[in-house]
Image (cartoon, rainbow, N blue to C red):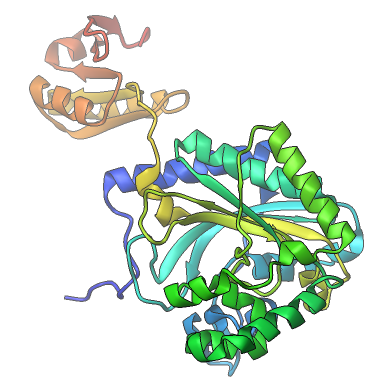
Length: 404
């Protein structure tokens, strides 16, 4: 028997399917309220796109990409994250030259070759939002408020963590101070951190090794090294969040996993999903469009891991909905099909193609959570009528086909 690849799961269970669909519908609706519209990018991209955007030093590029040479000798990979593809589309369609503001949301599958575990698969799904052309910290705050709105609508509890990653003015001197600190403890840190010291030293702060984390508690803090502009932006961001009742924590070791972030960085975490506690994250990446050969364009965005959220979602209490139609005689089946099709023009409706007894039709309607069970037997067929039972209030009546 052929089985699915490890870390690539089906969404088959009815409850999981409903939760997945409910997430997409909720997030889409809220993003649309904020003035964002849907963008779809390919699953397959040139490998160079992610090497240049995500960064050669990242674990994604170094260890996790599904990368291969296709039949046309192109070096390609399945997308490991969503932002780079959206930026590529933004530049390719010359939106970087058009000026103004462009706001997009997307959802779909991403792929990373890593050890599968609860909430982290090799094929996983993300919902993401990207905004281009707005330099104001108010746009950063809008992103954070949008995530908070989505999580609240889904009934998911969260804690928000904030940091600032500085800019090209304040980052270089901070990096020098951090490298000096890393060198002072180099014999005690893990191999990954030793490697990152020369490739992207700020990423050592994201190390999950407990010994490394304890050492980095004494590392210099970027928040203490911000230039005046970055410091003012970060203070303004906190003020906006306070004014809109968004509680947050400052995490000076929050650096995000990708190389293209600057200034605002944020992460939403849950205490209910074990060690992989991050459920959404994002920040500002003003340099990425330029890195990918576009015109300099301020940008900010976020992404949410859908699988990590599924078990946390509080599903709404569904009241009964729609019609279930059934025939008790073979002669009534064609009429049932026609009536079902007519009902579908205004309501949710389904039917049974087989002639069955009343008890079986009532069971089927109940299983489908239909509001009305509607049945035609020989008597109803003769009188051009249909028996209708309201499964919510238990009332029943016989109507003419015309009135129905």
